[in-house]
Image 1 (cartoon, rainbow, N blue to C red):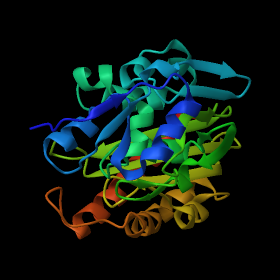
Image 2 (cartoon, rainbow, N blue to C red):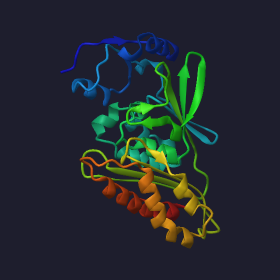
Image 3 (cartoon, rainbow, N blue to C red):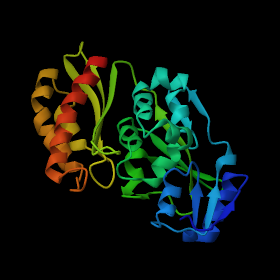
Length: 286
């Protein structure tokens, strides 16, 4: 049963931040509402006010030189059908096509997904591997938060209570860059997710820059720099031989939790399996 609440209708990001600051923990941002309203119906959270930001125009996708700018209110459906993203970020488009179902994707927003920080959500993991930056606004000020620093814990981010996420900035991948996001799960939400971005050198004879991120297994998505160090700058053959060790490191970095989605040990094993598959897929794209 959804309790009564007041719906605030700000006309600007500045007004939305002012409302959030004034009402504190009794208020929450309302965008698509696919996660928030469900949690409220179940009695998991209770807010006296929802601050509706749908009128703020934060639903544009544009390319500016080497960066893709995605408004925080862009829906999953909008992202999966955007021509610019289909060309520049096919891995993100593929991920978005597999978020929940089309009804959820038509309403749910990327910004809402990131800010809700549900542990089994997909996008944050890939955005970490892509080196994305998230833009937070408060009044006339803005600040950048790297995707890898944005997530603190389950349902907790770096956003201040009176800040608003307005944009996600994603660097356009360089030439000879391969991207892959793989996930595994037998319930509605994934049990494990893994993303990799890498460049190949010398006709795929060696590995250049590489970023690895794991998610869905533990409280929050994480970048795995230690696993990256085992593979970066190595010959392709040496990197492939190092994948089992890199998978073990990534599995531990996932901070996997035993739950209905699987045991800690099982999830750590699946991380290693996904890393091997994602590495081969990303390399084949270079």
